Image (cartoon, rainbow, N blue to C red; front, side, top):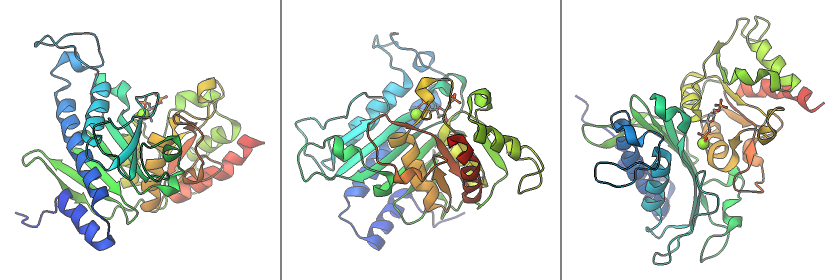
Amino acid sequence: MNDTIISLDRHIMDEQRRYGGRGDFSAILSQIIFAAKVVAAQVSHAGLVEDILGRTGKTNVQGEEVQKLDVYANKVFINALNYIGKVCVMASEEENDMIRIPDEYPRGDYVVMFDPLDGSSNIDVNVSIGTIFGIYKRVTPDGDGILDDCLQPGHKLFGAGYIIYSSSTILVYSTGNGVNGFSLDPSVGEFVLSHPGIRIPPRGKIYSTNEGNYPYWKEGTREYIEYLKSDRNTRKAPYTSRYIGSLVADFHRNLLKGGIFLYPEDTKDPKKATGKLRLLYEANPLAFIVEQAGGRASTGYGRILDIEPTELHQRVPLIIGSREDVLEYETFAQKNQA
Ligand code: AHM
Ligand code: MG
């Protein structure tokens, strides 16, 4: 039996000692861990409790109105973070506007951006879903955080991570000193270090994309996917296709095994003309993690982390994964702009 299990709390404390800090970030992370455990517990019951599967307006046995799981997760994360005095403003994919800290609680120095339950169309069919978060230092001096605090480029991220609710619940995060993964041990109710020092292979053999969008992709993207499926590619053998349709799950697999995930812009749907996925809640945190693991994240035309955001719910093309694969896509994407 292993008697030197490293809990996530211990790891956070070790990182704080090693890299300094006042413990503010650790306090935020501890609340995210708590919220993740609450959401994980609900997700694991979702198959049993019919009413929490994607339906609202129903009442449960106590006569309370039942919330959709993504709405529930949103509230759990807000309530875990809004009272600790470390955060000045938040923004969530589930909310139209920024989330103010209630008047009765102090404001802190950090900004938290999150997607509380990504891949929510997969909830009803028992497929993996996840939470994604990014943490910035505020740019304004004090008081309520404002839009400028939220609209920071990803290279300013102080830390980022995700939680995947699957056969086990795993939390992966980085504060800019590499990437580590922790699995929730249900017998003790703690996350324990299971994936230390994650590095993504420089080249993979998996591609993940919604190929149903092929007719609406631009020329360069189509050619790239044809190239991967042929034996003309660098591997001299067709790539394997894997697409779950939950970004966190597709990303996590590729992070561990190597490969490329693509959600490029779409010429059919005007809403997806600039991509589907959200810069602040999805693309930036995962781009930060993949770079910390030695990979690359790009729009096809430039680095995700360099984008200066202009609005909260901004969408971007997201091409992310093994460094050599993403760089190769970028050479094909030049044709998209011709
Ligand atoms: P959501 O934030 O509404 O859940 O949408 C994001 C999800 C991602 O998890 C996934 O990568 C993508 O949408 C799948 O989109 P599609 O169904 O168009 O392939
Ligand atoms: Mg999402």
